[in-house]
Length: 169
Image 1: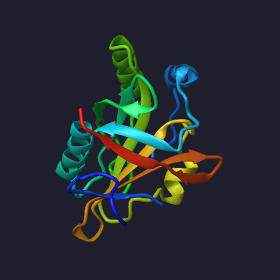
Image 2: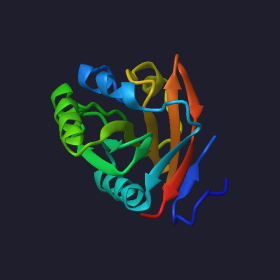
Image 3: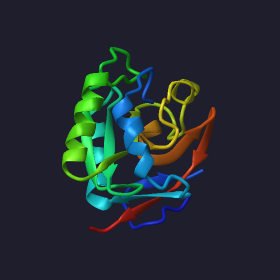
Image 4: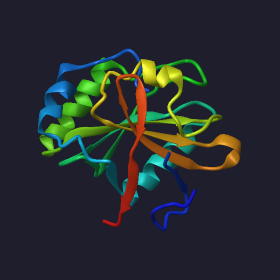
């Protein structure tokens, strides 16, 4: 697959788990969520990959924020899971991050996590445990030593691919 930008990482185009907060649900009201693409700043995209790489062999996770349906800031969140192939963000971490983003005039627009040993596609566990169908859902994969990033919306049990557009500042 060819990337849409001149990034050194492949962009695969074709899980928050068990938590949900009112703070993020309230923030969704102002977002245009019908776009077939998600824009992310190049620096944020590269920061996300490096952060996920540093967590290997464990999964890394976090949130993205922006003024629209885009990623202009990365928020690293501690993975509370003790398993190699799972991630879990605490409700408190999510609420704190959402309040910090709001204080900067931004909303939470995306969730990201890594797949250290599987593809950049949401697993059945990712799909079943995503409480935010209107956010972008990014997966950074290191499968077979190759970095790929997939971007989706998970709507009613289906992973809908989104075109990931990497924007120069």
